[in-house]
Amino acid sequence: MNPDFLCRFLLGSLVVNYVILLIWFLAFVLARQWMRGLHTRWFRLSDDSFDAIHYGGMAVYKIGILLFNLAPLLALYFMGRGS
Image 1 (cartoon, rainbow, N blue to C red):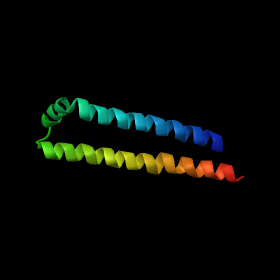
Image 2 (image 1 turned 45 degrees about the vertical axis):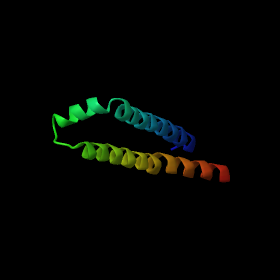
Image 3 (image 1 turned 90 degrees about the vertical axis):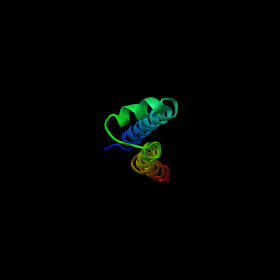
C-alpha cells in the first residue's frame, strides 16, 4: 500500500473522528437534559452516573483516536521524512 494514501486516509479519519467527538461534546453541553431524558427511558441513571458515563466515553474515544489515527499518522510522517 502506498504510504501517501495511508497518510491521507489516516488524516481524513482523524478529522472525521474529531468532528464526531466535537458533536458529542456539544450535544452533551447544549442538549444535556434532552439526552438525559432519552437515556433515562431505558436505564435508571443518576445525574452523576450519566455525567461519568459520557465523560468516560469521550475520554476512551479520544484515546482511541490518538492511538489508532494520530500515532500511525505521525509514524508514517516521520518515516517519510527520514528517507
